[in-house]
Amino acid sequence: MTAKRATTAAPKGAAPSPDREQYGFTFNQNRCSGCRTCELACKDYHHLEGDVAFRTIHEFVGGEWHQNNDGSWDQDVFSFYVSMSCNHCSNPACLRFCPSDSISKDSNGFVVVNSDTCVGCQSCMVACPYHAPRFDEASGHTVKCDGCRDRIEAGLKPICVEACPQRALEFGPYSHLSDNADVVEQVGTMPSPDITQPNYAIIPAPHAQGTTGSNAQLINCREV
Image (tube, rainbow, N blue to C red; front, side):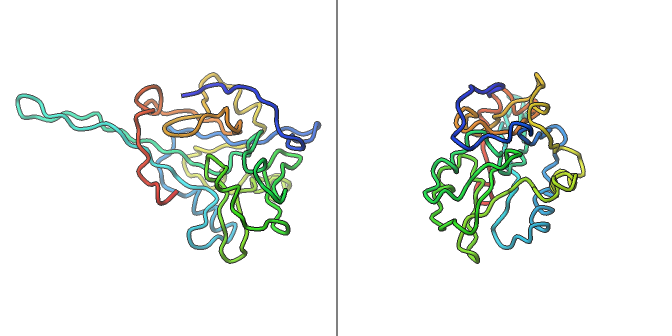
């Protein structure tokens, strides 16, 4: 599990405006119950249909049951969740590999897709280690979380953050969110944060840390 990532140069044109901070999400695993309210609120707000989802819940499990010599059973079974959307990375792989230059970072650091120039090649979907871009069959181009830019400009929080009943999600300038010794940017089978420098800080649950967390398995692969 990685608490701090290495610093690498961001691609040309990928940094937020000098007078504005990079925004990001923080997620408290200890509060998340896996209810998927954030996922459903996002789909409803953005009018997403079918299998297209900007935010998904990843379910990790591990441990097993052990039978004792006296016939009784003990177990060390555990589970934890990760609420995942686009992490609006500082060095986004989707941007680097887009052949039509249809992906960019705006002044707040949000990674956005220009639907007018997207050719639907899905290269960004292959490149993103977090599987954030999704292909919209109806429009023929890639779509993804844009951080609810319209809500942010109106002084509101992203709809997923506002909808979470457990207040497991938060949002704001990433330098503030990540300035906490307890946060990490990788749990379970998540990729190394060194690859894209995600702006996603996780307050990990006990079972998500160390060797236990690295041995956890993602059990809803088809869903996410």
